[in-house]
Amino acid sequence: MARTLKCDAIQDPDGSTPNISLTDAVTSFGTLPVDINDGNIDGCTINTRDITVGNSKHLNVQAGTLTTSGPQKDAIVDGSTAISRSSNDLTFAGDIKVNGNTIKDSGGGNTIQMDGSNNVTVLGDLTVTGNDISTASTMNFKPGGTSKMELQTDGDLVVTGDVTAFGTLSDENMKKNINELEGDAMGKINQLRVVKYEFKPEFQDHEVRKGTQIGLIAQEVEAVFPECVKAKDDGTLTIQYEQLCALLIKGLQEIYTHGVPQETSFDWVRNGTVIVRD
Image 1 (tube, one colour):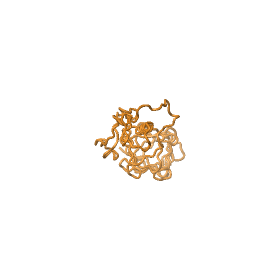
Image 2 (cartoon, one colour):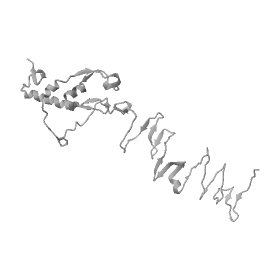
Image 3 (cartoon, rainbow, N blue to C red):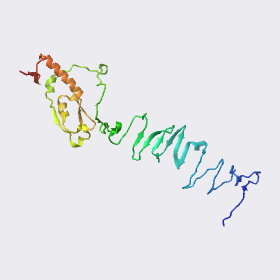
């Protein structure tokens, strides 16, 4: 049978003042356990007991501060440690879900924006102190919102505009086993076949690979100048065209050595012999 106690104060027998005043703010419970189904606890200090918030219930702190001491101040536990704190750093054991679309900086300005479609915009400089940036597929760089450069999963870097570089490393201090190139350079160059071609459809994954191309075949170059051909991790062959430029210089030197006058026109070189125009 339910019973109801009505009073203005609850006082411990040895006390001279109420332990709980129902007309004023509750200031102390002593060792009296209290179960509040509906109501407020105002200005209360809990010394040895826990506060339990039931399922679907909330602990609200309005215009004030909830302060804890001891180990409780460094962790929020949900079965196991969910959030831990060290100094001013927070460590989350799981994912972080942001219901809004913006993460603000300490000054209140928008720093990171999310559009709900897995796109993130960083409104300042992005500094990565680690060693890796990972992507599941081709990484696109879009200055001004238009794709200008692609870093593909096979390691290819495709750029739609000009590439300005400081040259190929060629400092003598970096080299050893330096020897003069011997042999019939022009005769070997003449073995190379310059062809027109198109990439197969499955390799036309960028504008620069579409349409008719002019160049060499890596397998044919490798048969004559193996130093000018390198294989990628997947076995695809590439041509080091800067090395072919050095071979062309060597071929021109051979022509000059053969004593051809500078104003003489020539058609081709075969087996080291210059065929001059009549």
